[in-house]
Image 1 (cartoon, rainbow, N blue to C red):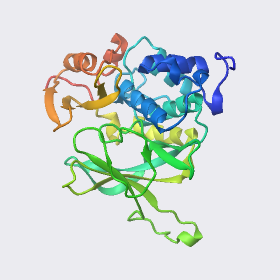
Image 2 (cartoon, one colour; image 1 turned 120 degrees about the vertical axis):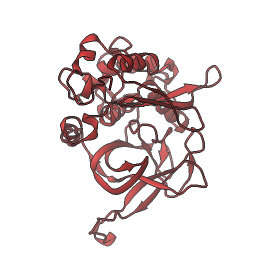
Image 3 (cartoon, helix red, strand yellow; image 1 turned 135 degrees about the vertical axis):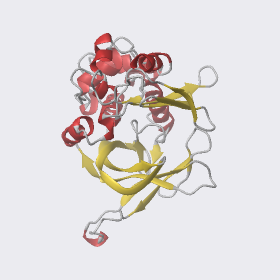
Length: 333
């Protein structure tokens, strides 16, 4: 086995020693480490993915509780923030989590993986509506080794509450149960309404569209779209990151968001049993049925206490003070 302190497999920014730290953090033993030669099959990938999304919440707190009010995407910084900082329970928003997870997967031995940029639709009254926006999200596209024909899976580690809770095969119209409650998810493939170039014989590409519905009786809602053949690089996301985390027109800059998936079940199991969510001051939970409002925070003291007790996120005193005067500050009104 290569020097674990220096070897970085498949272009990952992380060493095999860091993989050991990661596995310990997410509650997996060394049988998942490359030195144990695990089979890189769908069961292995699913276990890693679900450990990832239940260990690292979707959260944009570095925009709000941060003296610099900006997000850094540098992979070494992300490892420090998420893993090696004394267990403060931190996560990140979509680009942080997906870039971090891509480097983890490469270090674990997955070599065929790339980023794809995603166009989201905005929610109106809780439902995605209207046109698809510009690129504001990303997913990882992974080809599972030793599959014939080669099977691609979409790994969305940073979408939040309505995102997939397992690796989703890039297969059209295949309906899946999304673990929590009765929600179903699928991919369709189509042109976006504003696509003008549609000649497939000349290279035009349809988008894969992620859809969900909260029960089999309800209509499908289309949430986001992407073209897996169009690879994005980390430099592409540096540009998007500035808009998402620093532009005052973007909701991320004036709304605190936190979503944590909950892991439970029998001893030794890693089942996702629910999720808890914070939107600005409102805290909701879904433990397999309906989403319920459990608390409304009206002050910063209340919110930081809920972040600690409900989400397991411990902010430093400097971080707590950084939100003063910011648009998202709770002022007891």
